[in-house]
Length: 352
Image (tube, rainbow, N blue to C red):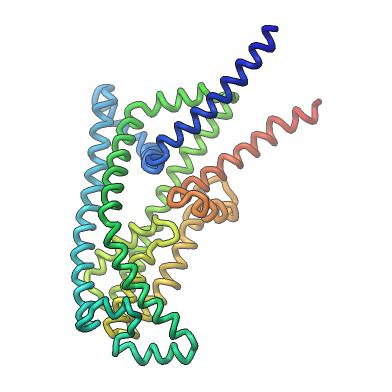
């Protein structure tokens, strides 16, 4: 009788635990991205914080506070300066486009009208039977610009809240990360050596992929700067830094910078330069984005090159921006489980 009661008690607890866990994810889901990003940053820099804690005489919270402030100064302040330069350059470029479009400005694009200096190219596209698509694309540019302005305030508020949660999480992960990991390991119904192996894979992949993505972003930014220099656009270093930043954004990527720049050149009458920059972005910058991460990750993780490709791009498709790290991480943990299965479980099955 007691056995049956205990069984029902265990089943009830498991169901309640799963229900509360789902509710917990629902509550924290809005901040899951900054928390996971904080965990990756701390996994990369945890040894440095440990060194700083020793220098502070074992005062871990003081060391964590200093580490968090330093990361804030090294990340947020340069980004704020970059954002200011971006807004300044964008306002100047929009003003030039308005002048080039004539008295109606972007109103002409909203109505699908092609600027006079762009008419020969439009006629050529018309002969290729893509004229309507071209007019629709031009109209879409104006509509997108009008709509995006309305969402800037909301996006800014979300960014500020996300950054706040990011740095709060970084501080507490630095201060109590070792305790959190120990609690997780103690809560897992696994052999201790297995769970420690999985955490080791997570830490190694996090460190490797953060380094790989930073390097890939810098290379893409440098390639973008070369294209901007060739066509003679102002402030190529600013745009290169923005391309390096946008390289972390899935799907859109660096195209968020070089595509509008190409459209600016086309709309203002610099047809050859615009087409060149468009091709440069698609062929050189875009191709490097698809090749750099898997090639740079090769040798840094215990994964076959094919699995590196699959987990990076599959992770992006499944999880968005964090998929660049989560995909290879899941792949590495999976392969660790395969190795454990082959080493520990298969011999037992054959022995039985």
